[in-house]
Amino acid sequence: MKLWQILILSILICGCTTVTHNTQPKVESNDIDKAESRITLGLGYLKNGNMVKALENLERASSHAPDYYRTMLSMAHYYDKVGETHKAHRAYQDALDEHDDNGHVLNNYGAFLCKIGEYSKADRFFNRATQAKQYYLVSASYENAGLCALKYRNLYRAKQYFLKAVEHDPQRVRSLLQLTRLEIDAGDFSQARLRLTKFHRDYGYQQTSLKLLVDLEKRAGNLAMAQKYRSMLATQ
Image 1 (cartoon, rainbow, N blue to C red):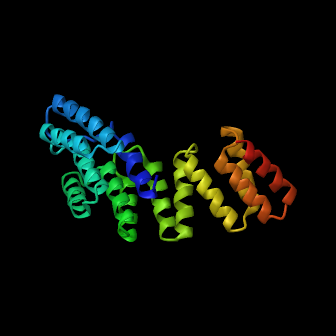
Image 2: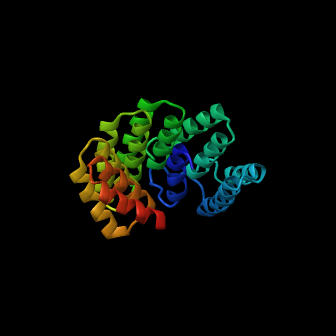
């Protein structure tokens, strides 16, 4: 899965239950329920590559709750997925106009902006998302900001964001591993080794973490240890 897909889908799917009182559209709750059912179907079809059924269900969701933030984000995601970048941009803008303080909207728009190369603007929206009221996926937005910073090679900013992500959620695995990679690349082998030791204590040996260990020990000149971890990786 590509970076931008991770950024968008992680919030689009996980962020389905948090709506602030200030941003919830004025529709009946049963309309929201109907829209959610269609959104679930639509995103499922989209994931499986059935674009016709995806659009049909997402348009039905719009007919039930056109101003519901999840409906608007799902339509924007659909347009992005099928290569209608201009329509996707317009759909994200419409969602932002309607829900300018909704953390999910701010985060997803930031992910879209990062994908199309508007990195500075994306960074601003990720940061706005982390400050949004009643938005509980702050660690995800910091992680997304870090991934975006990596994409435009701002390694210092990326590290600060991954640190923030881990502060807000110590079990943020992707951020932990990205931090370790940055520390290895910077020659901070002791800190990287400590971080991986804790990671393996909490989660066990994983392919990604073992690859980092191999690289770490090779760069540190510990060739025997590098070979040990390379052998462990081969059995994974």
